[in-house]
Image 1: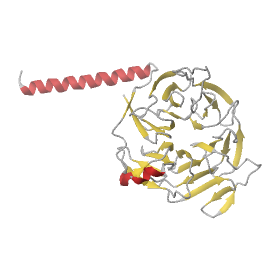
Image 2: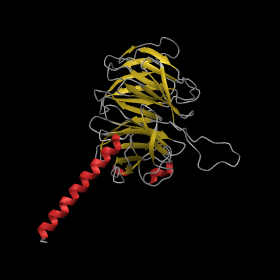
Image 3: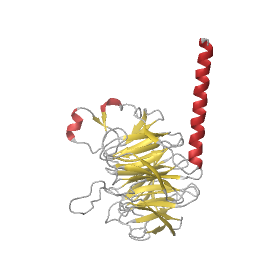
Length: 356
């Protein structure tokens, strides 16, 4: 066999193998299984200017698959002997390069907790320690809206709008997560990251006027929320190990259990929580939002659930500090390709997992 013929044969075999792999992957998905995820150790690229990260409170992805992480800046003082404190808001491009960063450390919340891009590309931030929800332009150069302890501040005309209807109405205690409804611009806020907080879902309109609220049944904390394309609201009940599902008006629809089991049983038989088993969630990018990715903090992994049934299909990750392992995973997001990003609080890292 000539060399050119041999090369063509090898190339043809490679194409057939790749096609077979794609066909197999599609077959697995059609049978209701979940894709396999592996850590992308080449992402992100090394941070510029000897930046040192603190705990990462959250992560979100925009329409161009740019990834934004929330840096709480809670570094040990000695860490800065060898570097510089990284900014509160850091934006990466799909290749993992830092393309933008911003935020005044004196003004930003010390416990940045959740972020979300709305349909217009504006960035919304929840500050658990400040009780503030803020809306910024994508690049952070303009504060567009602030909802918090003293009502609603609209930076366009400097006036206060949406005064509280009662002691809690237009105020937040410890907002942890938010989502802007693509249909009408209403903002759903998980308000109550602390066990002594409001422990509610609050809904305001696009200019911050209070609309309604509800308190999930049996909830110790309301740690995260997101909305699927069918308008259902998914709420993390972290301590009770479940995701609770509601419609836009707060009518209860379902409980999705996110169980966890200690690998090593304690000698006294008392099981100790280490953060909860439903800390944050995100959906797959398909129109049906078929898969739901839930941070199971107690077991240090990501559980992949079938959204509509709650059935656990698979999981990835484990406790540890090597690539693909987690030290208190805290925020999660999924891009348009289905790749998953996980932000660690104690581990102070951002991970990317590619689907296979």
